[in-house]
Length: 194
Image 1 (cartoon, rainbow, N blue to C red):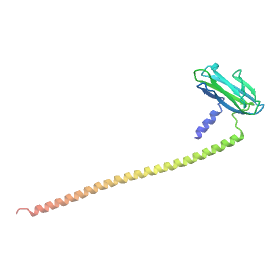
Image 2: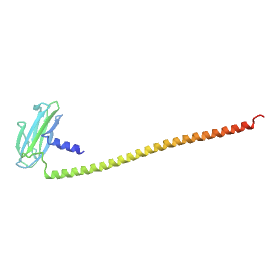
Image 3: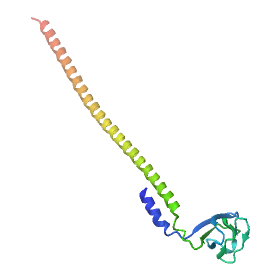
Image 4: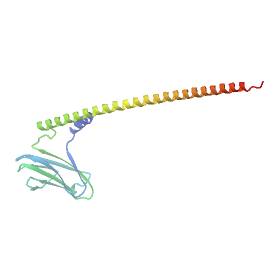
């Protein structure tokens, strides 16, 4: 699991944009929070489709729509709240739109202190859960090893027991044959004609 986290943290550095796959003619939206007078920069690129088929809509918290003139647009936030950027595919084929938005030029790759504290708490909880899982796995492994050892011992005991039974059977048969042979010999001696 640590390996997955390390690999994920390496690849997060290389993520430069988000992507939305537009399959049908329904708009797909992404929300962002902005404050009054924040500078919002939005860039998008249509991949795997016809760019003229893709419409972009940008709405402020009061649902006022702003038009886009190009694939890179800068806007000034007039209100505080959730802004919405929506993409709609009017064409027939599915289309992928990659986009990026930046508020005040703040680098999105850095989290706030509260985010880091929450992430650290989440990672600590995950670490604790994995230790618990490891403990259960070790317990299960030891239990399986004990069961395997007991089965091997039982098999050896059954094998030895079977060998002893066969030997005893042979000894008892041999003894009975010996006694029958002695009896027959004694009977032959009694009825020997003189």
